[in-house]
Amino acid sequence: MAEALEQDKSTEAEADQRLMLQYAAGDPSAFESLYQKHKGGLYRYFVRQTGDQQLAEDLYQETWGRVIKAAASYETSAKFTTWLYRIAHNLLIDHVRAVKPVDLFSDAFSEELECDNQLPSDQFSPDSALEEDIKAKLLKRCIDLLPTVQKETFLLSMEAGFTAGAIAEIVEVTLEATKSRIRYANKALKECVMNKWQEVDNER
Amino acid sequence: MKDEHTDEPAQFDPELQRWYRKMKQEQPGPELDEKIIAMAKRATDNAPKDNVVRVEHSFWRQYRWPLSSAASVMLVVTLLLLNPEVPQDVLRDDAMPVMMQMSEPVEVQGGQAGEEQALKAVAPRGMSVKPDGESSDVNGTATQRTTSQASEPQSQKGAAYRLSDTLEKQPSLIKSSTQREAVISAKQALNHLVQLVDSKQWDEAKKLALKIEKQYPQLGEPSHPQHQIWNELRVLLKQH
Image (cartoon, rainbow over all chains, first blue to last red; front, top):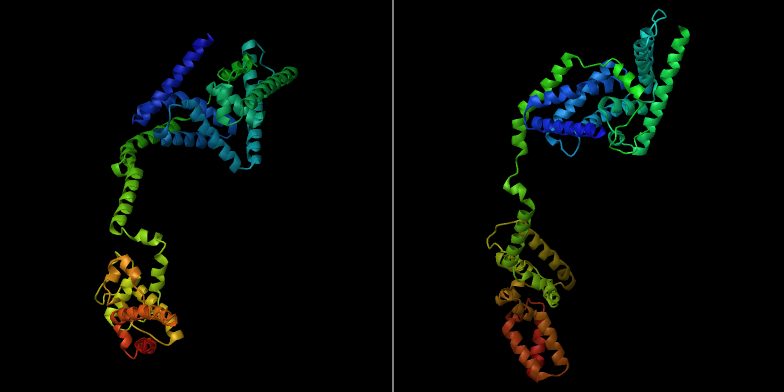
């Protein structure tokens, strides 16, 4: 099962590379296919990291702009998704360096207030499907509360299915540091969701 | 965590993964999609122009290092062929006396002939000296140098003679370096003669005096600085 999954991934990676080379050779439809395939994950990577839709869209557009510009120099030795998210990561880092951290925090808090409004009221009965929905919403709040580096690691894994090694390559840290981030993020998110769920349950 | 190997997915808790999949999956708006795809199409439309610029692997550019090396070698070889003796002169041990001879007191007196001779004496062989009044930087510099070299001894000794006197009589001086080395000035010849007279080697002295008389007839002119010494020596030799 795992082997089949791995093979699927390598086939997908090869398909991406082929599409990118076709685009570099002047086929715009190849880019469109590539774009449709990766647009959602990349968009959410920015939206969930910045908490600001306008900023996320700017960075998202800039990332694709850089992919287009660098298409001619794209090397098949690099996996396309790794290359794509590395560009995205670098843009995000540049932005974080350029703005005051306070601004980012204020956005995160306003997002949190929005999430509170979406939480279920007492009148809903907690059957298992509803419980899952609530926990998904709670998870969104918990992701916002994660430290930036752990949040990025989590999103790279969830949105693009990257391995620890690939994440380490994208964010330019050691493999050990990446594994540590994954471990902390996993623990923090699980605890956060369960604590919040407990609060919701108590309120009801 | 199960992620012991780098190529395995970074696994988070299955519950977290499940909840994450249930979260709202935001997507970029259609306008943004169109904008980016249009940007990509524009880039491919402009691509042929870019390619033309990029594919400029011309012969000269591709082989620039071998070509420039070959050109340098050609230049050096050509210079060596044109001036075969210059490096030899520089490296010769006896180059110094020649140079000393060059820096002997010289006064270039107005005339073109004197100037040309001075330039011939200063300029290395292979360099052409223009006979007419065509002035150039090289000529100007050479003339200035010669004049400045001449000015010091002139003031010290209060005497001057034409360089052409020495050189005009011996055109072979310029032609071959071996002959040039053999040339000595009238003053040096007289000094040698004085030494022979002092040591009373009369036969040798008479032979030398004959040679000097032939080679430096200008010593007979009263304006020559060595005229007086020459006359005295001749009188002494006649007495013996």
